[in-house]
Image (cartoon, rainbow, N blue to C red; front, top):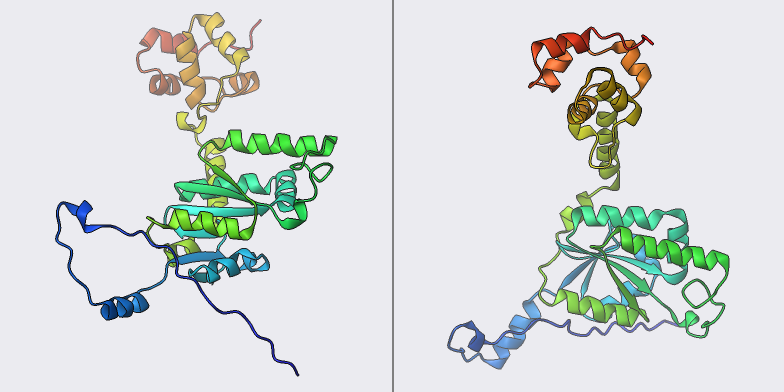
Length: 295
């Protein structure tokens, strides 16, 4: 059998070098070169947390040869964690098109923005795309209807998430150089925190919020996009002169969405007293006893 030889040489990861002159006149201490070599050997290399699924690509190997300690683990939010505040989602060009069509990348970016201040979408090209300038896909100039839809979805992704950074790289080596720039002044990532972040927790919280919105009778359930039923508002204002603001406040809190709810349940005096505290007793009595079913 012929033994295989692997290149295990590693470069020294770039580090941020500071001068003592920038520290307010601190005196530089003379260091023995031998002590400097030992301290450099004992110092830890910068770490990058990498999702296990990313080892099908070339980038983790390039990062290792660049001098970084690659921490392989299973994380659900992000592909590469560079610091407690920096998360990167890597997409190849063909993978990006599929993720845009399925909507998966929208969900991934939303989850990353929920937990990381600096969220980066890394779009990595490859050598196989270099010769495909025309008719090579949605990002190589193809003008078919399918490719136009992909580009439209990509524009929607950028407009929907203005805090997302989008970076294009030409190769895994170029991506590793970009990682080096981000890692210069950033603290080391927290492995336990990266593993503890679960995508289903965000889904459960959103589902719980939706359940609260459908069951609770609070104003916060509506959110900024909520608009009252104009038919019910018109009925309340024209029937007995209720102010528009009072009608909006009542519908935002009371379990009344349609005229059917208004006719079946009616408006009780306790409901009016709770949500329209400025109303007089005569007004509350008139509204609570009003027959909405009459012609």
